[in-house]
Amino acid sequence: MLKCLGNRLFIDEFFGYWDDNVLGLMLWNCGYRLIVIPEIIASHVGGLTFRRIGNLTFYLNERNRTALTLITNSRYRHLIPPYVLKNTTISAMRVKFLESKIVVRALVDGIKLGNKLRSKGFFIDIYKAPLIKVPLRHIGLHLTAVRRSIRKYCEGWVVRNLSFLTVE
Image 1 (spheres, rainbow, N blue to C red):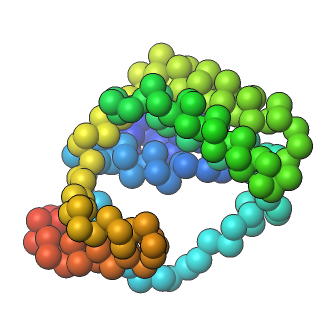
Image 2 (tube, rainbow, N blue to C red; image 1 turned 120 degrees about the horizontal axis):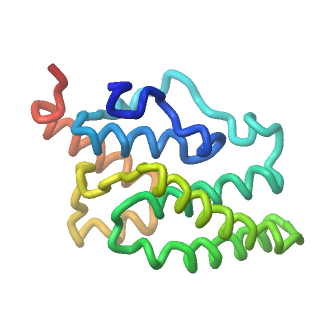
């Protein structure tokens, strides 16, 4: 497994935010099967890594989200920078980050990081990740009770498909 991941579990540059997402996508990209068992054995206290939600937290989250998008083959890659800019601007206003430079810096640095990683050979084929198709009739549920609905749907999908997800 480590050989597939370049002899390290995490990409150092993704420290703080999105590192676990990158790990999962890289494992799927290498052909490994992953499964989530929806049993809480530990919980993550938001902001514990950096003690408070502040500029660093905000910056790393948006920078890493942008960079992740750029090392994938998503057909929506070109939409992410404007989306991140919109979201970070709204987020910055909502949590009273007055330094608009942080928003722009996160986006610019995310693009630079994504390009740097891509030039080092980091690439994730996101279409190798298993997709759970959500029927159109369930979309309304996802818009109203998002967390509970998605969790319930995913749990049901895993139970129905467990035999296909087992690891030998």
